[in-house]
Length: 328
Image (cartoon, rainbow, N blue to C red; front, side, top):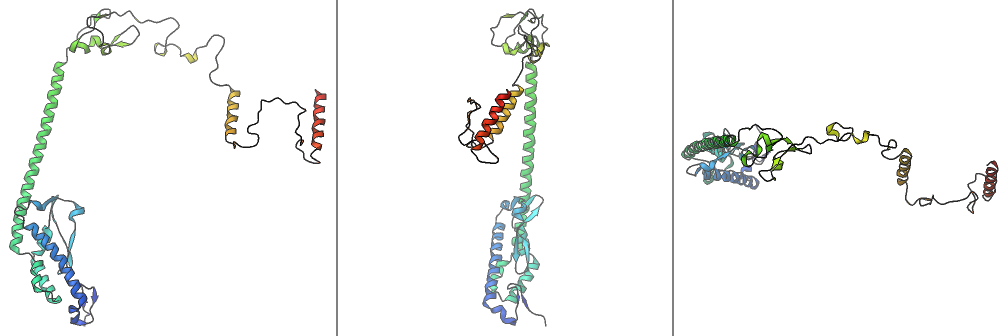
């Protein structure tokens, strides 16, 4: 004999048929049916919309991939349907609740679990109601497709209108551009006024300082005449643009001038950088190296010694200093 198993309680019922009437089983039955009835009521409310326009949305996997657990069939049912890139709200659950398979499984579930007969119709959807929902959904899909096509045509018209305006603007700019005039010569060239200011004659003309004169001279009064007197260059002088030698390669009078610090100054600077890394409060850090001291100077405690008494180091220092003086 097979061991009975309760899918709602998820355990084997060894008490036989009496398990269906236990308090725990009845409580789990009510909770499962309440969740299914809530989802079915929301789906039937969406099906009651006349035009079904609210049931069409743009498909989003994170939002429209949810499932509803059907305790009668013992499996999860997709809540929303899908057609292309559109999501049909509650279409999957309504199709399941109106199907013949769900109706048969609901009858079996009610018979096995001794559920209340008045609650059975709340978990079912009549076929006529689902047919009305399907027709309204088809109309909503057709209307949505018509709006999308109209939006695409409007976008295409806007793009064509923008291109047409751009072409007209370019043509108007080309028509306003004057024809190039031949300049009589550099000696006499008047600065044009008005729209002829950017003509080739006045665009690039060399001035007295070697710079170009063009639209930058718009501040001058009209009618003035600019006369080109040639490039002003002095012998032996110039700049790098005229081919002269740069100043750092020219030799000055009195020898070559040294650029930058000397090697001795660099060594001193390097030594100072090393001293900066030492502790600031170390012994001898603030010693005045510029002070003048004689060879006879000796601290009262004597000099550094390796053997003997400490006071003997003074006699050793005086002996050595006397020998140095004799050698000198």
